[in-house]
Amino acid sequence: MKSTLKKTSADKGEANKSTEVERYCRQYFQIAKTIEDELKDIYWGWKKAMFKAIPKMAKKASSSKLADALNEHSQKRKNM
Image (cartoon, rainbow, N blue to C red; front, side, top):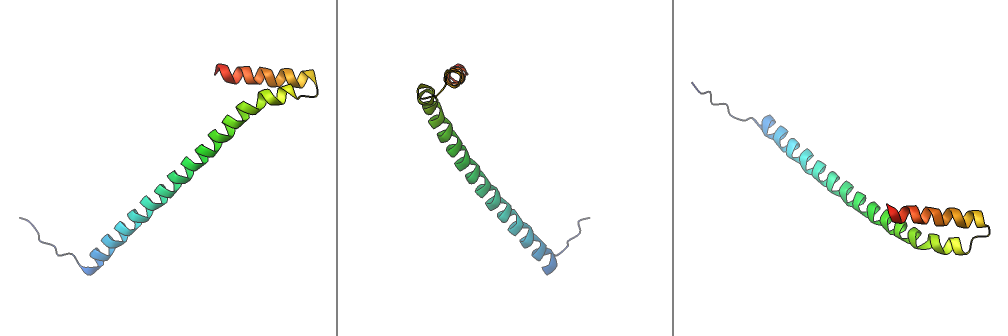
């Protein structure tokens, strides 16, 4: 025997709140993903610029120890 329950206005209100919360959650995660992607782009751009700059810094280093350290770091990064 099936019971036929009618949805009350309170039930409908709860359903609307639920879908509204879900919509806000989707928007939040979409914004968070966009920010994450932008930060990754910034990071990789910075990293690429540093890879190009390290050999230049090594050439202009004031001490041979610093130049050696920069060159060693540059070589390690190339081998990764």
